[in-house]
Amino acid sequence: MHVRKNIPLILLVASVAAAALLITDPYILTMLIFIGIYAIATMGLNLLLGFAGQISLGHGAFFALGAYVSAILTTRFGAPCTAAAALAVALVCAIAWAVGLPCLRLKGHYLAMGTLAFGEIIHITLNAEVELTGGPSGIAGIPVLSLGPFSADSDARYFLIVWCVFIALFVLTRNIINSRPGRALQALHGSEQAAGAMGIDVAGMKLTVFVLSAAYAALAGVLYVHFVAFVSPQAGDIMFSIKMVTMVVAGGMGHLWGGLLGAALLTVLPEMLSYFEDYDMLIYGGILLAMVMFMPGGLTQGLARLSGALRARRTAVRPGAVTGGRTEDPVPRRTAQ
Amino acid sequence: MSIESQIVQFLFTGIALGSIYAMVALGFNIIYNATGILNFAQGEFVMLGGLVMVWLSVTLGLPMPLAFAVTVAAVMAVGALFERLAIYPLKKPPVLILIIITLAGSIIFKGSAMLLWGKKTYSLPHFSSEQPIAVLGATILPQTFWIIGFLAAVVAALALFFNCTMLGKAMRACSFNPTAASLVGINVKRIVLLSFAVSAAIGAIAGIVFTPVVLMEYDRGTMLALKGFCAAVLGGLGNGAGAVVAGLLIGILESFGAGFISSAYKDAIALLVLLLVLVVRPGGLLSRGEASRLKDF
Image (cartoon, rainbow over all chains, first blue to last red; front, side, top):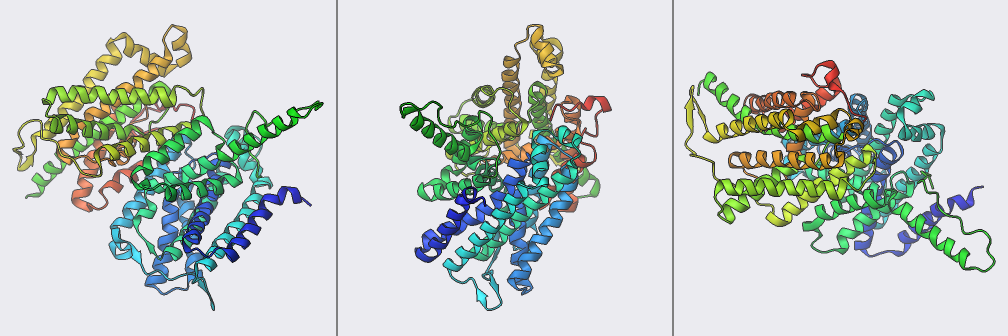
């Protein structure tokens, strides 16, 4: 079968298994858990932004809503975690559908502003509904994920759960992209008119992918809230939505691995730079600007270019080589791998 | 306070707020008309205007009119620089990229302002006396009249500029058809630069006159941009008169909403209006059908 095609995925599975067994340092585990959580959210946003070409500046709100619904259900109503998580994701899907239905008729700037306004409304509501959400001070004491007798009470177990979810979603997303609807989605990115002329239900497609990507964000929010055990409205502010967009853009819009790469980079970077707190907006803005201006394909494409160039050089140096190494397409291709 | 005087009070507060939104909306429109770009950093120009003015007139102690002029010039320079560094180098970028660029610009401005001024909230002395004036039982700050006056001045200046100067007419020509404009010898690239400078200047003026009433801090920009955008859309994107009317309308709506419904949700009111308008009539409520010509989004 496609063993070669699956090498990166197999490597990922192997390294997750190895990491679960070998890494005991709580700091590194925590960081890996956060990378996994953000990577899940980013993968969903990438589906929308990178593959379908629709921007959302309100995905932080879906993340926060997932987190809040799960937190409220478990702390206030004593619901079991799995039920709360499922309900949270379902509810966010419903909200995304209700928001997306009118908003996705909008394009470009309008869609960006519409989703930004939606995100801000959610942020305001989370702050204002003190009785339900705890207001600015948030909700604390959220129980850890558990299913029956199994409880994710150690970092190592939580790490495993998050990354298993990530891998499962990764395979799912890859299959979606390589399916007929997935290709329809990418056609939409190229030109909505052309896609419509080919018989693609443009509005329905956009709505479906919007809801799907909101579900990813909500799931990430649920995983986040049961790990951190605390949530405040800050989880849903504009800056977080922009950070998610930055992760997608930095990793590579329209590259499935891009989301993971961007999430990893922008989770590790703040940890490595002390005083990052003061400069975070400047750094995120700088990365965002530099990426779209100089490397629109993101890191994934940058790395592919680099390895392509190296390979080309290696073959060129070999005496007697008639054809040079395979060079990258001048036009950035959107592929699942 | 009687209900009548309360209404007068809210009306004046609303008009003052609305004047600011109208100015932000005008800024949006000028760039939009020249380039088809919606500048997400528009609100940051207002924030920068306020903070630079505080620095010049309070910290450095410059006289008010001089500080005013220097602030407007400085923010204009920032706007022009932003265009030269981030918009100019790109050839025919897709809308998605443009959105991300102005968004990145907006958080870079915000981040720089946070580094320069910190997270503190700054105040600026009122332009004239702070003694409220009694109007029909309501108490109105004189600064309110300054704000309304400045909106009138900005509108008059823009009307004069677009109708009576060669440069203004060139800008209008560009907004109708950039290709045709360049064929008659108009330097379109320079017009784009000018549009960023002019709209930054309007933002700065809004920030300067607004700060004495509501204070200013580094993260005000996004909300101002959203509400200004709301006004711009409500008035029909690109329509100057519509922007002013819609801006005032939203200000009044917000002020009454905060007074009579809930102050916690006052910011949400304009945003709900925005979502509603986007959904129901993206061409704007106040525009004539054909005037709501949407650029190629």
